[in-house]
Image 1: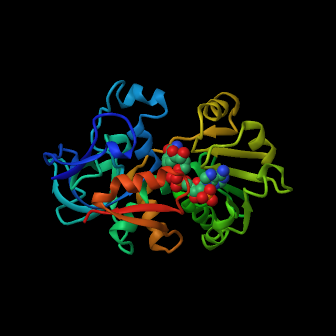
Image 2: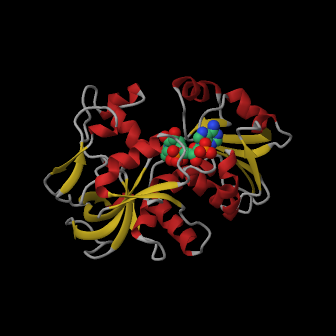
Image 3: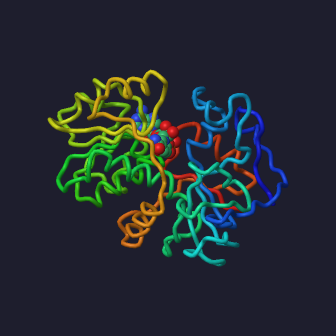
Length: 317
Ligand SMILES: NC(=O)c1ccc[n+]([C@@H]2O[C@H](COP(=O)([O-])OP(=O)(O)OC[C@H]3O[C@@H](n4cnc5c(N)ncnc54)[C@H](OP(=O)(O)O)[C@@H]3O)[C@@H](O)[C@H]2O)c1
C-alpha cells in the first residue's frame, strides 16, 4: 500500500511516499481503507519532534512511528477476531493519536475504542475533519463541568481547527459566545454562531470590559494573569494549545485548579456524541483547504503556518 513515511525528525519535506506492507488488525482492531484524512497540529509537532521533551515518548533520536496521520475516515476492510461492533463495508471515522498514528496510508489498523460509525450526513473528507479537533473542543469546554445556558464563553483562536468546533459546541449548549480571531476572519467566526467577536490585531480580550465564565484557549499564547483577568468571579479556563514552553509551564505550574492545560483523548463515546450533534445540524465541520494524497507534505506545511481557517483535509486519491 502507499504511505507517507519519515525516519528523521524535520520539516514536511522529510516525508516521502513509499510502498509498505498493509497492516493486519489485532483481535480488537479493524482494518480501515482510508478514504480521507485531516491534518492536525499533532502531525507537524510529531514530524519535527517538537517540543523536544515529547521525544521521550516519540523516540529520542529517531521517530518511533514512521507513518503520521491521526484523523481518518474510510471503510472497514476486515475486522479482528474479537470485533463484533463493525463489519466489512461499514463507513467509519477514527483518531489514532493514542494508537501509534498511521493514517497517511491506504490502510490502517484502528482499535475499536478509537472509532465510530461515520456521520451519515458528512462526506468522508468532512468526517475526517472531526475527530481530533472536535473532541479537543468538546473535552476542553466541559473540562470544568458541563456548560450552562447563558454562561459567557470565550474561545481564543476561534477560527482554527479546534476553535471552529468550539464556537459551534458552545452555542449548541445555549451559552453566549465570544470568538477571538484576526480581522479577515471576523465574518467566519460570526458564521460559526459567535454572538461577539474580538479582533486580536486591534483589541486585547483580557483588557476589554467583558468577563467570562469559561475560556477555551486553543492558542495558548496568554499568561495565567492575563487569563485570570478575563475571568468572571468563579470563572474557569481550559488551555488546549501552547505557543512556547514558558506559556505551557506557566499554565501547568501557576494555573491552579481554575486554569488548566487539557490533553484530549478521542473515545468512541465522544465520537458518537459528536455524530449526534452533526446529525442534528448543531455542528458542521468547516473545510479551509482540500489536498490530494500526494500533497500531504504541502497540507502539513500550510497548517504549520498557523492561520488555517478551520480544517485542512486530504482525499486519498
Ligand atoms: N491538547 C490537545 O489535546 C490538543 C488537541 C488538538 C490541538 N491541540 C493544540 O491546540 C492548538 C490549536 O490547534 P488547532 O488545530 O486549532 O490549530 P490551527 O487550526 O492551526 O489554528 C489556526 C488558527 O489559530 C488562529 N490564531 C493564530 N494566532 C492567534 C492569536 N494570537 N489569537 C487568536 N487566534 C489565533 C488563527 O487565526 P488567524 O489566522 O486569524 O490568526 C487560525 O485560524 C495547537 O497548538 C495544537 O497543538 C491540542
